[in-house]
Image (cartoon, rainbow, N blue to C red; front, side):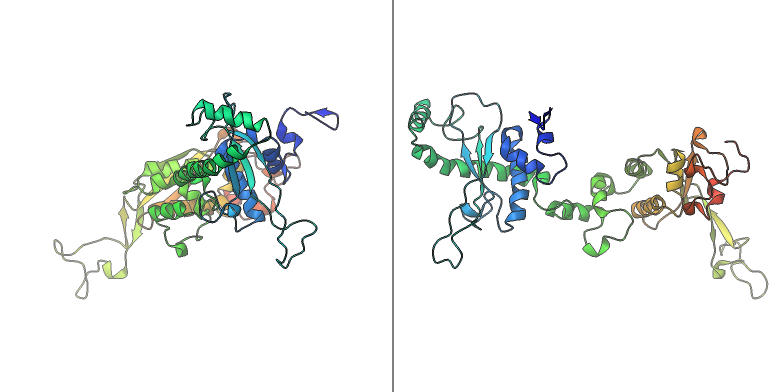
Length: 369
């Protein structure tokens, strides 16, 4: 292939990589390069934008309301691809008396037409005998395709049912946007977000949690599961430390006071506590992230987006049962020296606008790492 005197090795480049019409033009020009399910899925998207009322194959409505009409290739050759070709059918003229102009470009668009190689009544892979295939080919050579068109009435239904079965069992073929389809609603229920009012409350997209449904649906939840989710979501090393412990403040009614008006002072009967707080070894756990680069370290500081997303993920996983703390470990080779301003490397300067108020997190007393 050549475009403007330049040879292009990939067909996408010829049809304009990154342009809106690139894939659509490629599909109709070289449909044999596409997988069958991929091609039908693209037609659903393309035709659905132009004609929202069009339906997927075998989802109800007449043939004119479907996004694609299927035909079967009749040949005794071994097919090299699932799809033979994809083409646009000519639009039928508007009927007289319909109240619309019959001249100019018609507003009635016919569904696309796809010829497949893998399924049909006739042909080398068909159910009919070879003699029937030879008869169809003989009549087609004389521009008589009546028998072939008649068989395509049934071929369309066969291929449509084949696609519908696959679509029913493959979530990726759904026409609904990810996170809004029926399967996503089932998964939301498994992870505790089945009610729409519970969604959209975190700095993490709810849809991204569906990938971790297998872990989030497990009860009881474990530290290993939390480590796996955080490590995969943020793409950093994560280590959880259980039983970090924490001092828990007691309510004044639980204090031990002595004297005639004292309370909680009877040994063996009351809970006698010396002080106003107690140590609870199970009250807190610690999450260690790292070793981190300086940019990663900075992104996890309290004023940046990763900190909020991290806290939301952890709180969603453990709920309100435990408290937690976060420890950020900066890689030794990534620790920058302390400078008020670094003209060569602006990101390590301590006077960055987004670093104000974080000197205790990002600065060192000596200038060397």
